[in-house]
Length: 479
Image 1 (cartoon, rainbow, N blue to C red):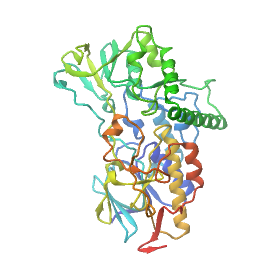
Image 2: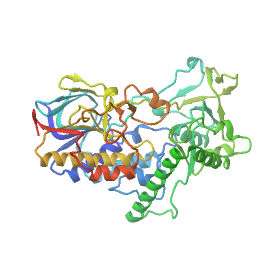
Image 3: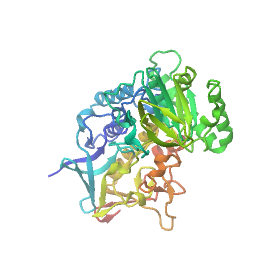
Image 4: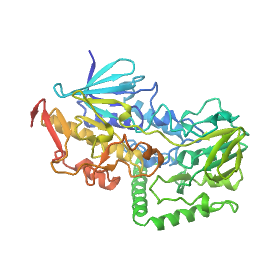
């Protein structure tokens, strides 16, 4: 006998807690549980423990709209965000709905029963009418660690940011951080505060933008003021992204000039801060209050651009023969992406291949009934999109209740071209590596994600549920 609820949420991180709030306020008649694979809540913000871990989006938009971020510090530490997420869960009675240590390994849909049966790694079974996956899209068990030759020869310690050891003492040490993405940009200034020296070794640079880490005044603000700042930041982020796509050369020039003004005289813009791609082909790296550049100017950190040939006993060697000595090497080489939380999904006994799915409204999939996957924006705060998805799920659940429907399955209209565009329009390595397993999207909505909150908000909150792209049914009886 399995535990039965109306809605089963998988994941108790930022998205899962937000989903639970929406379910209990907008679908108060629905029962739900959250299954969390780890022994604590918080998701990303509990998992990552590396020095300096912080948001790379402002908290006014990354925070929940139903509980506005009111602190003056807009770029918050991971510890602060974790406390905010857990306090939210406690405040709204959500923590009691979480079952920890339940890693979901499989989910089986039965059309005959109009029900999902979910199994966990510890052998428990749960069933539900609707399955909502708030698992994010990267592998929690470990990040991507490039296979550099000579790793076994290095005499020091090698660590990956996703598995930062509690006993690592980096004070006074020479550290090499491999990478140029958001994690490396965060780590370098944080480590440089106490390390002997930190060298960021990058194959190619990323676009960076310096933003203020906080709002003027330094005091907790009113909910109204927080919402106003949130709206301002939504618009500003959207405008920057749209400008980057329309006038990439002009935006690239602006970003490079901003960086150049903050570099010390002995650190040239080219090649260290001149990317080979257009802005927003990969995510921009936020540098709060210019802390990375301050570390470079102080001489506590340096940057080297080149290709690593191998690790050597005393550090790393580049293909041009340059050797960089290190006591610790940090491989900030990225994430490993997964689809649907690595859950084995079956529909009426047929295994689902995630790489062949067509995504509907950025959250559901062709041929997969009563299931949604919560995925945030690639070009703005995760929560902006995640909250829209949760609110749409609630609208959908209320719609099928009103019309006495049991099954809702996204179905492309006859003659519509097969979706064959990548789910995420980024050239980042972690996206390219996962291309074969990620669902595909089409050329037009609702089978295409526009990644624009100002367009998505009215569509998700006010658009028709029965839009001609979804098949509604009772058990074996089409409505």
